[in-house]
Structures are given as C-alpha cells and as structure tokens.
Length: 124
Image (cartoon, rainbow, N blue to C red; front, side):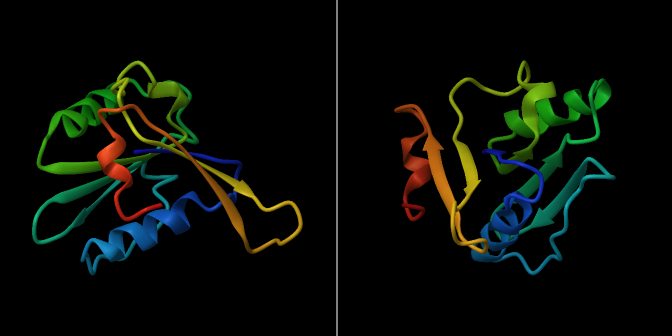
C-alpha cells in the first residue's frame, strides 16, 4: 500500500491504526529518519517505509523490492515517488486529504485495480 498526503496529513497515524488492527503490539512511529521499520504479527511481517528525506533511494530501493516481492509480508509506503519504479503497478494507493473545515478529520480516496480491490475489504 502506498500513502499519499501532505506533510502532517495523517499517513503515519493511519499506519498506527492499521498495524494495531492487524494484531501487532509493536510501537509504531514514523520511519522518516531510519527510512524503514518492521512490525510483527502472528501471521506476517509489516514493512513500513518512508522516503520523505530520501531523494535517491539507492540500495534502499533493493530492500523495498525484496519486501514487495515477499508474499508473506505487507508493505506500507510513505512518500513513494522516488521509488515508483520499484513499486508494482497493481497496488492500493490511499490518498489522505485534510478536511476543508474540520481540522481533525481526513478525507480518504482509494486508487486500486481489479487485482487489488480485495485489499479494500474492511476499509470502506
């Protein structure tokens, strides 16, 4: 899954709720300075990447590619523009926009293909 929003738009907050809902008790925080973090659940690993401060991902894109190809994991990606060439074309993109009048609310837009539509089960 790729998340798109402005700075402070709610990407990491969504990831925290998502990881918690999947049963992980790991502490979730933004990997802005470490680029990636891993969270464990009983069934799979969740990889959380944040490329905000990485204009040229270099070797990190290799790690991302391995995680994306691992069918036993889930990849959550923030600021993925610099690694778009590594990401699969068929992916769920979640756009988060601030509500125009209520500061603490967000508006979600989901972009998906027929192959990724199943990922929305339970989200909408």
